[in-house]
Length: 65
Image (cartoon, rainbow, N blue to C red; front, side, top):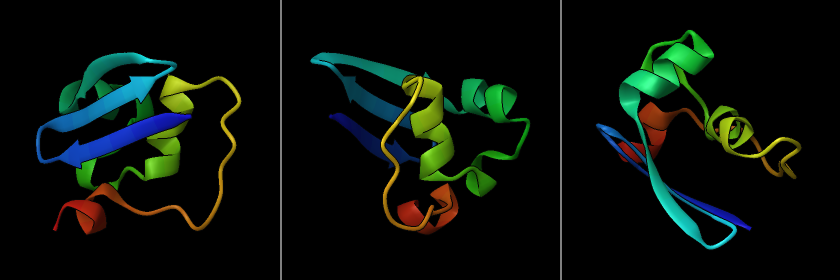
């Protein structure tokens, strides 16, 4: 299971027991979108090759406010 923790500057990730950070700029470059408009599903796709997506995608802007 992958855990994502969002804030205004990026995302803290725990993937298969490894903790790391995805900075806002890296996410914007990978998705070609403004950070607030990126969804949690898009971030999960950056981390995992074939993630098990469930529920509706949520924009980062909605998650951090």
